[in-house]
Length: 353
Image (cartoon, rainbow, N blue to C red):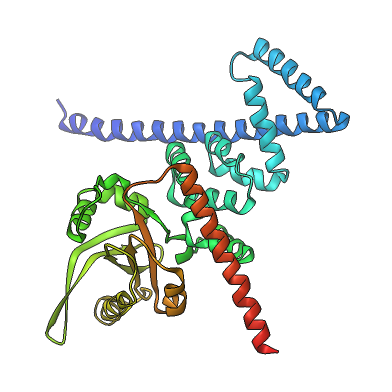
């Protein structure tokens, strides 16, 4: 038997399988795009009909009748609930240009999650982060339920700043630190009880490193634990050292038990200056420091102007409070941050007069 014929089929089989899988994926994407467009068109047409008569009862009758007719002719998949999703889709995104971008990039299952977010900026945030980190529908749902937007630094900025940052991400794929860092971080997966040490916390993070990175963000890459640095013949140890691929910088994390203290800034500042001088490579951005505490006083952080030193402070929760309490806390934190921005801008304007 010819030896070439014995060996060649392996390569052929592999190539043919690859072609089939790629084509199946392209077909699935094409079908998803077409169906999403259809759902929007159906929702838009129903909206036009309902608005024409301006009667809620009429709208309900139309949806019920249409669901019956479509189910009878086309089978399952055309329930009243599905039609209401279509209507909501068209109401949320009346601009066909925005819709055409959405259905090319996200599945219908993702879109159904997005359309029930009322705040346009929040909706845009989740859409862009979903595309960036390629979230599954399950992960997407979990991110929304965990109030990721409210925990991300960008939510505490002025609306125009949020819009500008999201536009940069959308149009130029540029990610700012305010879209990366969160407060608080949910570390309930570590399984720590009421009493634990900083070493326990660090060890638990290493054991659950994959879960920790998921909570931090997909672009964090772990580099070292207890990274040893020597300054003036003295040893110092950075608890955790990461690299963020899109920010293109080292991220030093310091773990603390208890509330933030002023002295933590000096320690982190020393780490960052060392990393900048000895570890930062050409083309990388300045290292960022993240101090994780169990509590913090906002005025301390504001007065110390930590952002100017590239240092961020965030709380971490090893036990999550009831959802309602957490929602109230996060919403209040966003409100306070924005009130302070208005106050600072007002004081700045007064000083110029």
